[in-house]
Image (cartoon, rainbow, N blue to C red; front, side, top):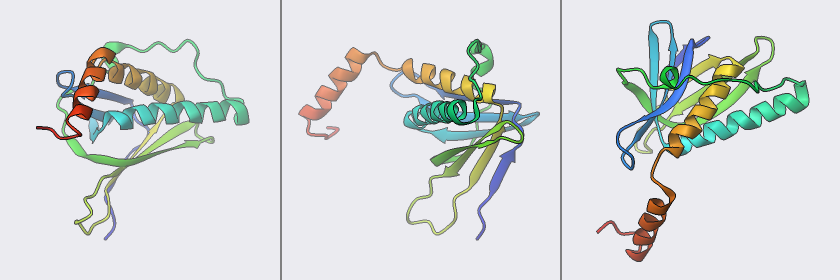
Length: 169
């Protein structure tokens, strides 16, 4: 069975964000093209990994193709926030990045996390974005993740988890 592929080429907007109180946030990647909006449910680790992958891709573009990053890129907080309604198409399992030099576009491919007991192909989303859009997504995504629990709270919670030997009760 062929997997469902959703493609926005090019996106008019792309972001990563979170909904919910600190410690209980749900993370999303959201892309739009005109009136079409695609929301993908993900983990905060996906957001950080995506930001790192964007940085690595841009470092490679700088060294191999002499394409410079935007040093004066300003990110508008209000514009980067998730737009309601947020209705996830699927939960992200894997992501990858590519670069189309002919079009000067970055391709983000996200595949659905399919439970092992389901016999079907994962759905896939493909978003073609400008370098500035992806650089803004990386910076904003890192910022959103960083707004989580304070380091002292995380350390206390980790210590309590270890003392319980990983058990919740």
